[in-house]
Image (cartoon, rainbow, N blue to C red; front, side, top):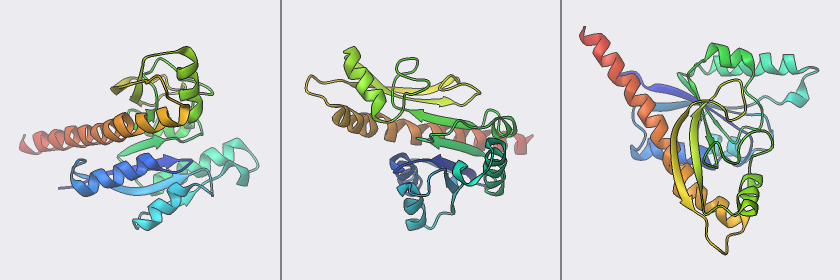
Length: 208
């Protein structure tokens, strides 16, 4: 049985990458393997996480290229080299370029730390999402896994999970709760669901 190959695109610490690694290890995510981790940031701890787990890791930074087009081409080539069936973007602070969107249409998912369509789009990443949620006074927030299209957090929603906002929350406390109670749960769930759908489709095709 062939495993679904995933490539994870990250920019920071890689806490969701760890959730994926742990999910594959404990069987929460079935029939899946990580074939590569790519960051746009040389200092991203996610690259160290990848190396600690013997996963192929690469950095493709826009700072190393004279034009955005050259960067997009290099990123595309690196992704293609890792041959993914599914691309997972997790805190990846670069808009996925058109050449990757075209090549992997319907095969890219992202995890966002809010209940889309709230607190999403340009400028809404990291702590900023939770700062805005607290400023607005919402009582419920959460996380969303969605498919990636040409917009910013505009692709079809796949999974969502709600998380309560508590009276004494700070952005840091709320961020931690959203990660623990939503992001680290629904991202592995989404990958597993896609892997199982792919597996069942192959089984059905083989039986015909």
